Image (tube, rainbow, N blue to C red; front, side):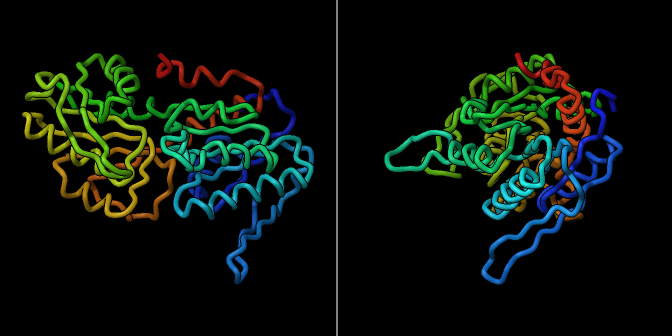
Length: 322
């Protein structure tokens, strides 16, 4: 750690990201602060910070993954508790930011949920947000506090570069993901193809065609996305790619939401390997061997260290930010 600040950062963790927080603490060589979280019989959440944080810079690690509402309330209460305990600053470290897909009014009389959640973090007392691969980068503008938006795609790229995968083509799972997929293709110096799909209803996708179909014939295919939720997009795309002559198919995503029957669908799909990160924690041995989990603890630890010591964070995602 750099010595720009007199005291080391205080790392706290909610219940959804404790394992990741412990890895971050190991990287920073600081202990994980002790907290207490419990439920009342009426399901209300109670939190208490059991370490002295007066005058300290506090970083609270918590993904708002399932159960999203409980984990969201938990981090909001921890932020409020830290502020009322006279912390010098409170940074919310949210590796997976839930509600990010509800970022616009695409039909009448719906909530702009991502904006509401941003307001809640501000109201609770967070002075900064550190997050990873927002579903829509524009969500940063919903916040009235500084947002450090890390891109964990470099972790996925390093995995591919250090693997034995050769002769590959990057495939964008949909037209909306083309810019990011092109970045991946440029970094890996390989061709790009695009899946043209339509989504008749939420969590349902249908492949219409493959743009650049000739690029995938006889090639290993890398499908990059920011998240895998129900796995419908990945599974449908993999079937279409295999039918059109692709060799081995690899799916790589930062956030492994894996809701509903996603794991079963991935096991049955013609995908050789699924690579995700630990932005969303999983119980040990809960995933099949086909799914590999990479850690983003070093990325988050370095970002926290840089924020704590008033250094630039942008260098951490320079390669991805084309």
